[in-house]
Image: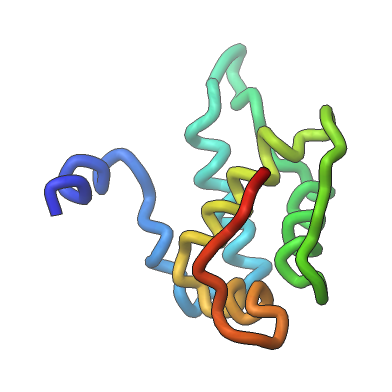
Length: 111
């Protein structure tokens, strides 16, 4: 489509990692996320930490839908964008976990 022609050179393809194991997929998401952050004083200004990566995996793999509302801990700047990217991808393991034992989810609600 016209949209894809415009943006395919600016953004990475979320759907190129369909069979990648979840841990590796999270690493790829985090690496790509970092490259879109502000670069100043020789470093990217937002880089997902190991703790944030573990938390993202925890949310994806949780037995029930996960709710969080704590402000100021990097969840809205880091976790939420990464979770949305994981949801929009075609990564098999991500969607197996997000199904929570049911059918594949097609809607992600963020309030």
